[in-house]
Image (cartoon, rainbow, N blue to C red; front, side, top):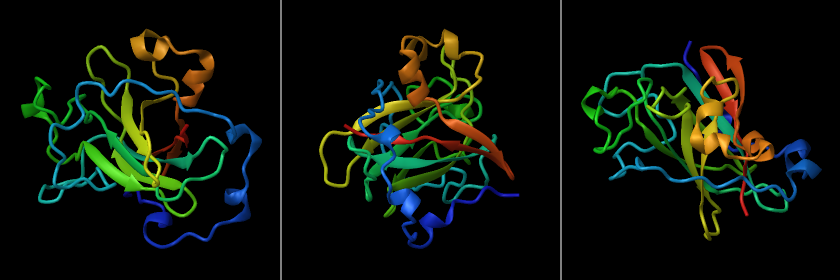
Length: 205
């Protein structure tokens, strides 16, 4: 069965008290920044929405394990940030990026968007339909992410990692992090009907 975006992207979400509360563990947290990497799109594709599983004008869906990447965007005080802008870019199921510098670009899955943008809803939640990224040579599986508050200001650029990956400990960028920072950059992954769900909260300075 297809992996569906949650209802927050189709209609306004009623703000439940649990979402409005500021848990103590969310206050004062900062998501660690990481390098942009060499494959941020040279040109933003015409189709750059939050559904990376289907590219306009291309047969689909994308190859690979469907992944619903979702989470909350919060400020330094733990408060949700409605309207925050979030971007992701990543390799396809074969580990190939949508970028002219990737030597295997000609082999890339044309049905996978590779880049997407989303706007956090009134509860500060964002969501993307994407895939579990393939192995890019020399790296552990990861998704690049950039977030910026709706009010403007500095953007956070970082990377999302996955638990239980054999290459995590050998990845130069991930292994050099403290245990606390590794925990903040590791998504909480659970199986769902038709794929996986990855929860990744973003704490902006």
